[in-house]
Length: 251
Ligand SMILES: CC(=O)[C@@H](O)[C@H](O)COP(=O)(O)O
Ligand SMILES: NCC(=O)COP(=O)(O)O
Image (cartoon, rainbow, N blue to C red):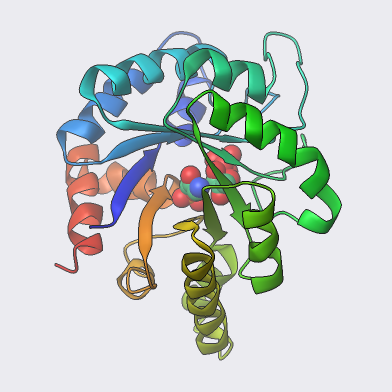
């Protein structure tokens, strides 16, 4: 089974466009879990454009009450800004099952590359150790590069999350590069498994590109937010979650 972790960033983004708590992020989290999602993902950013620290606390409590996986993504090097305490303090306070470290700069529109561990490996190592010592599984956001994935093992990660943006773009553009891109993802996944790393994936996955991506060797979990939320506008959130769960199951 490939787990579906629903990313609720975009629900928070709509909420933040007005005062008040509408739509309610926690209520949507509950709907997703009721509809068959295996977990919830959030990616708080220092500018709090969507997920706020209190959302992380509330969703952590929701997932704990359901014994479902909570995955918090973010830049481990971003410090405290205003009421954003920084990723590490927030994660150590809320104790998700998984923390996915992503090499985003603070002003990035969205995530668009994996770690260069030749550059960041040494400063990531103590962070990964601290998270693992707290009982939190650590995944690193990575491009499908075998040498980099070997380094992910060396710095102590449990899993990698393969960055699927270029794969999704190639599917959507019907690019001739698609075969090569998907082959690189398969080789990267096989290498990760060989190294003893678990394999997650995410970014711009949708109902069109998922039927192929779900065949990736050893894929354990996908986190999906943007497209699933867009589908929920026409299908309803529960139906959208069910459609993605079915798609991952090959139905
Ligand atoms: C790491 C990753 O690919 C996702 O978390 C994605 O970056 C979603 O973040 P935004 O919703 O802020 O674009
Ligand atoms: N890790 C990827 C994620 O959480 C969601 O990415 P997207 O589906 O919003 O592109």
